Length: 82
Image 1 (cartoon, rainbow, N blue to C red):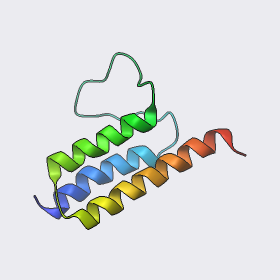
Image 2 (cartoon, rainbow, N blue to C red):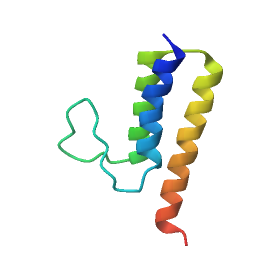
Image 3 (tube, one colour):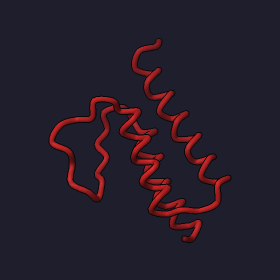
């Protein structure tokens, strides 16, 4: 698969992750009837699906995953920390 396709797919994922907490992310799949019990696990599953669909070299995949998990960390700590 092409690198540009991966960057577009993961770029949308990262933008949604880094946006304000509670922002609406419109996925191409129908929304779940109930919110996920653990949002970190939900976004990790989304990242793994993106990896499987797009593929690519391990270096860029690891970097993109690290960026997403840092964004999750920042979002979680911006809620409870001052």
